[in-house]
Length: 377
Image (tube, rainbow, N blue to C red):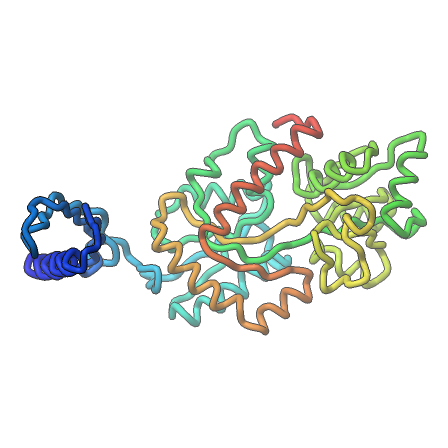
């Protein structure tokens, strides 16, 4: 190890001397040297006026980090080798669209890793049960969270959480954007967003809308609508997606902001009328439905998402290795078409891209909560 390092150091000194002989005015030189995964910083300074090698002296050698060696982290940015079955914890019940994403992703990763990838469904409490399970797991890449929009919403809804979103969860990969769609029941006889806004302004009693619970992403979707449109609606929270949709389809309530995949079947059956999608661009499965901006609310943009997260202390090189494999899975045309047909917009991207997105999204929901005076529970 020491012989290899010295040989590399001598090479760098010779190079520095050559640079000097060519009269490049170098007063100091900073090199970063990687040896078998060990990274060192070497500092040189000019110390003598004579020509050649004697001009330079190694003034410090700093050990910066150790990556990829046998005694270091279990994976590099290029390869992740699980020590056994990997578990993806999904915050929704089996059979739903988010669960389908988890299982399809798992099947793709199984082929790359050669080990089983299991899906553990932990529905309820707005992702809190699933997120807590991951936050308390060993940070080795063997357990992952299929995160959804509630991860961004929860800090603005709850006074305290059993985990710290920023410290106990770490970004791995953005998977897909999930635009919401504003729908109404046919008996309301409303065909456009502007008609809904006009009806709400003219009504003596506030119109009622459903959500899957106070503080849910669906709730925030409608609060942002009220802020941007200058209208007042009455919130009727239900305990989950199924009760909310049942109330809507049973004509108990008239308005709902749904994730696009969950609304597609009743829209196709003519049971719900879509007015606008909440994303900045139209959704491929609803090409004739305008965005909120196109429908008259230029500042409205509020898509949901699904992504992958890991325990907060998971080394970044492990997360980058997993990210690399996830990109290989989701770029497959068949995978993309399957979820585009459900209303997802496959995004992907680096660890840092997803981390930045989560940070901005948490802040954005905080601003909506403040503007809508949503009190923390």
